[in-house]
Amino acid sequence: MSDNVETVRRLETAWATNDYDTVKEILSPDFPKLNHGPGSEMLPPGIDGLIEGHKMSLGAYPDRKQEILDCFGEGDRVMVRSRMTGTNQGGLPWFGVPANNNKVDVEYITIYRLEDGKVVESWAQMEIPKMMQQLGAGG
Image (tube, rainbow, N blue to C red; front, side, top):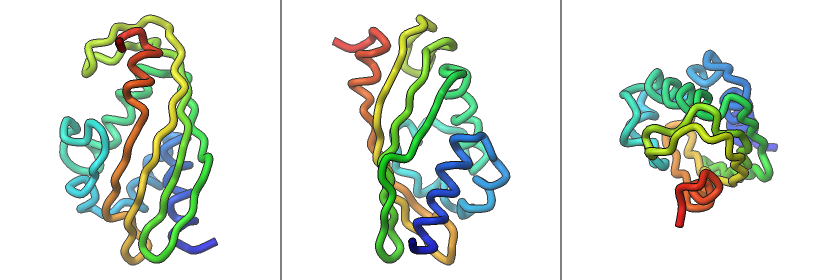
């Protein structure tokens, strides 16, 4: 396994276990400017803003579980396909969804770009229409 793949596995595990010290260690200080994921434009600035966004998600899904389904890479790029499950116990005010105890089970794909052992950029896609449907907010 390449060093970059191992670094991204550590990052994904850190997010899943709320290990924010490891998150801060792995993300480049400039990373938040190059985070191209759903809702990233709504987060407060900096790595602390990413962490606050993560904590908001945990408020919505206190029983949130994340698992890596696939992780591989070549050169400076690493791709991760993950699964997130949880119960909407806190609501998602940013989507206008109240707490309703609906279960979600969605996958997302993230491509990371690394430089010198740090994550400097990412692109992510999540099954948001599927999640909204599971939350009772989709058509």
